[in-house]
Amino acid sequence: MVESESQSKEQLENTPQQELKDKLKSKMKKGYFQMGKINLELAEEGIKADKKVYEST
Image (cartoon, rainbow, N blue to C red):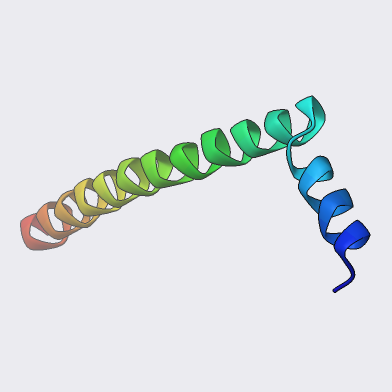
């Protein structure tokens, strides 16, 4: 890569807009992991409830 291209890339990575994108990406990733845990808990509760209903009939 040419030196000027390398400098341009570094400048783009440090712009306020890029920093905002990076923060948003990080927040989204964290949120997806939190939702994954919640979804797993709900699924496990649903399985327990289904089993209880199945066994009572």
